[in-house]
Image (cartoon, rainbow, N blue to C red; front, side, top):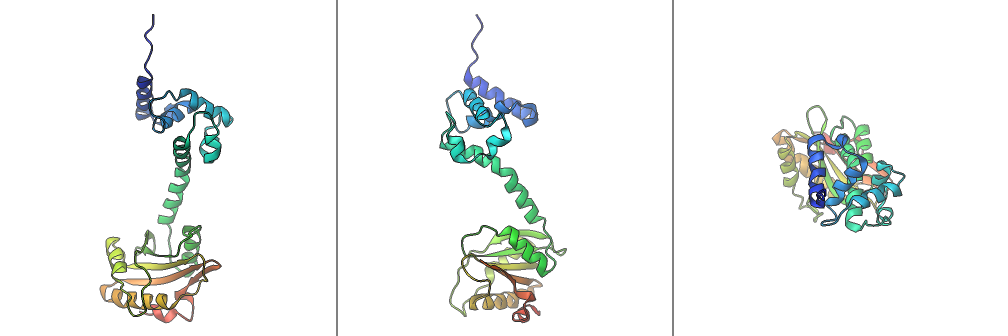
Length: 233
């Protein structure tokens, strides 16, 4: 009589298959099985993997592009498994966008506004960011600044200096995201750019632009005659 293979051993065999050959050496149902083992412990997930494929025309791409409610409608798929599958499906696009964002070149106000249009689309909270660039105007990083608006006359640019030093960046662009407001700078923005460049220029660093991203568009302060004086260092 043949010895029955344990399901725990089966899970390990699937993992080993991935470790040795990657996804290219696996069948679609095995890929789903492997993923489900991390969301559904101590249960045979082979039938669940097949159920997923059958529910989406045996198309692995459709499984990973399905929304959470659609996934949860499949027998054996709970919230944990649905979230993991959806997360797995969204990762490639997220990584691609991140790579594009950090490979961008910002060498004028047009490219700065285009970058902002892509990078900050969908932002729902008011916040400040700093885009650090290198000597070739290539984006090194885009970080959120932690400081909050304070009373006028009490702007501290130390966090901006710290971020630029950490990224080894001599130039940067500030961004004020105002998803529920207009794209004009307020008094705090005006004082912030003045204080920042006053502190940075002696260190050989400079803020090249300050973008105000409002609900109706984006303003480049360095390209607006009303604010150009803030950047004549």
